[in-house]
Amino acid sequence: MRQDLDRLMVERGLDALVVSGPVWANPAMAYMANGAVLSGGYVVKRRGRAPVVLCSPIERGEALASGLDVINLARYDLGSITRASSNELDAAVELHRRFLVDLGVTGRVGFYGMADPGRSWLLLRALDERLEGITVCGEFGPTVIDEARATKDEGEVARIQDVARRTCAVVAQTVAYLQSHATRGDVLVEADGSPLTLGGVHREIRRAIAQHGLEDPEGFIFSLGRDAAIPHSRGCPDDVVSLGRTMVFDIFPRTSGGYFFDLTRTFCLGFAPPEIEQAYADVLDCVRMLEESYRAGVETRRYQGMACEFLEGRGHPTVLSDPRTEHGYVHGLGHGVGLAVQEEPSFANTVHNSTVLKSGHVFTCEPGVYYPDREYGVRIEDVIWIDAAGNPRRLTEYPYQLVIEM
Image 1 (cartoon, rainbow, N blue to C red):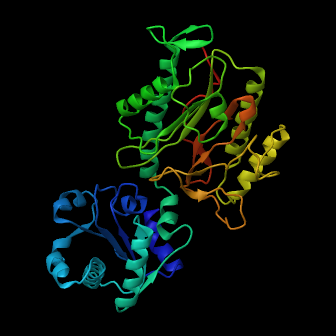
Image 2 (cartoon, one colour; image 1 turned 90 degrees about the vertical axis):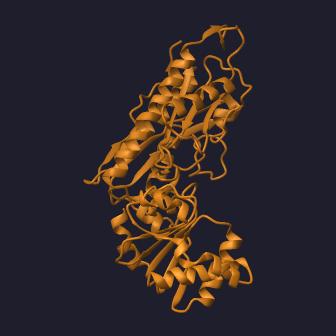
Image 3 (spheres, rainbow, N blue to C red; image 1 turned 180 degrees about the vertical axis):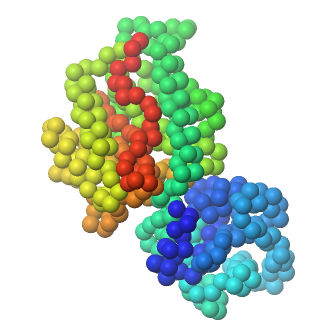
């Protein structure tokens, strides 16, 4: 949480943080700027001090929405910096020097945000070499800001719950759209008698997302049959929608410039073959077992092992016994959800992952089994919040329903 930043900075030996870039596709900047809509600029935080926003004069009004003190970058006379510099790198170094001196920043400074890696390397190396009293620090792995973002306060959880309600409404609207179609044989047909295609369903989903005031920057997954057995296949728009085949619907929208949600359900229209019914029951039982087991203080990597052991007990291959398997349970169990659709905490079952569940963590639980040769896949995904008492609370209020009646 934000109130943990100073403690985390002490633990990592950081005297200040500098975050830069636009807020779009830049969760660190969105977080530190409190959601203010900025196309560029900086947030500077000294340890023990409140953050400060530095922005272009044309965005000073938007910057005020952050609730932080705002400094107009024009104060540093950008024109004179440019005229006196022999190239863009020199100008960027001088600008940083001026505002860091002005804000009293010294010591070990971490730099964060989204930028071209080569450009960032050149700038950070130059800052480290030329700025007196400043040591540029990098972090490989979850950064101090990642760690702060990983635990959510009640206000953040409320915003995620709002996205959850709207996302569930989109899924319900999509199901109703499918049910509104007649069938000819086992194929769904439009009013003009032409077959309903996956592309038509995708258009309806995009329309529903917009109707419910959500954004779709990462896209969504709505795949059918064999494509449903390839976990991140988006589905072929020309596929014809028919009865009895698995449809994996994985949707991860967000509010405008804000928090994401992530929900997956697997459906069959009209009926489900017995093998698919059994696979669905196995995955659902795995979800329920895991959701009863989450507790603060437990290593996250343990849950991936639990999922694998459970599904292997039901006869499915998993990455625990065969890391290269393309059948059965073939992926990781979950990830954090917040200002990015995938963030901390990590559930990777690796020796380097020492993450433990904490109060405030919000994350997905999404086991699945996939059989491309049999042309079906099943995944169920809920979002879980570890509350202040350290117990799990499911934020996904959408039913588990394999068969959609037609």
